[in-house]
Length: 390
Ligand code: TGC
Ligand code: FAD
Image (cartoon, rainbow, N blue to C red; front, side, top):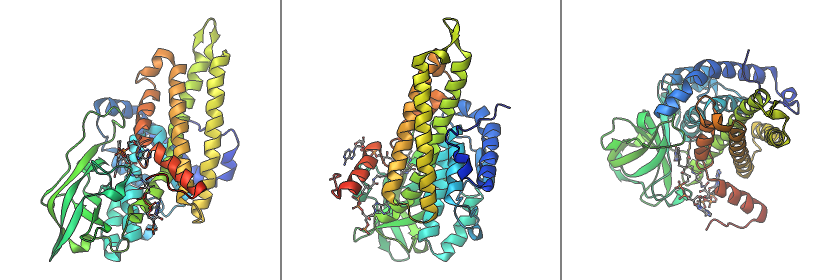
């Protein structure tokens, strides 16, 4: 079979349990059967393959770490990471949908919601019966979400929400949105906004060259009446949304390595088969340098995320450690995609191979969930104690 094998140069599989390996196999087979055959076509047409939502839910990819009593898969963080790696090997856009649903919609309801909110929304979100999106970024506030202007005021029976969010994954078809907005005192809170509420619209963003198989849109709030019971009661301040980002960034640290592995796998196979000057191009030193550096960087990345998963399972992973891994994995993946593309020569630019699609996707992944620069500054602040953001 040509089922993708993840490179395992340092025998890291020995550090995984049988359950982890079984989960990986299950997701890998699903990706091979359901994602790989169709994804290029959907990406070319700039359409999200909605029919995959059910399969993602069945895999447990929506809220893998949310306890089973709320419909989640009740798995550990290693399992969550492995799932994201395999899904992003298929496509970053599909992984984005899983990240948003699990880490940015289910997680805040689980961590900051009331018991009623958890019971009302989590099982349906886990089953894919409801799809959510996460509205933090605004047109004028991306890296600095604390400056947001979207706001709500007390209007007696409900809150009145005004403002706009931009670049929101899944917005065009989401049933609910976790929206971060300021109250009259300027304190940030999370609100559950539902499709159908008057004054709430979700225009789609067109013309993307990246994450084409993922739907992106705006969230526009024009005097939207939000019931008071839709406010997440147990958090206020920017640490609310940032706490969700830790979860998603952790998944991306694993996921981007999946995209890197797929590019490496395609380049290695091609290099061994493609003959120029009467010799497989894999036999030329310049191509070997590329492949050797790819596997070195993948191996380093694998060890980093494995250790991060262990810390996360023990509730010891710091946000700065997560930033380092997100930044490193995405940079590794993007560099590998660029080198792998060259190994394929002209074929590398076609949709017959996944590399160009991964490369373009990764241009979003290196920007969303905190840009490459922002994560560097987080590391810089962590080691120096000095904030260089402002
Ligand atoms: P700062 O003054 O540093 O901190 C304010 C409070 O927040 C706490 N905090 C965190 N808490 C939990 N997790 C984290 N990662 C945290 N980082 C900071 C901090 O301890 C403090 O707490 P307290 O109790 O003292 O009040 O905050 P700042 O406003 O200066 O922000 C710092 C900065 C720049 C690092 C932050 O704003 C940032 O990370 N910016 C990047 C924005 C970003 O990542 N946006 C992502 C939007 S969502 C998205 O892209 C989804 S893509 C989805 C997909 O398709 O996968
Ligand atoms: P800006 O913040 O304007 O940054 C522009 C440049 O300036 C960057 O290079 C940045 O690194 C640099 N910069 C900014 N501040 C500093 C500084 N202090 N020091 C040095 N350099 C700095 N957001 C959501 O809320 N929900 C989503 O679901 C979501 N999905 C997304 C999907 C896609 C496809 C994309 C592209 C984005 C998505 N985002 C989402 C938004 C994403 O999180 C933001 O694009 C990102 O946080 C950066 O914000 P910005 O685009 O406004 O860039």
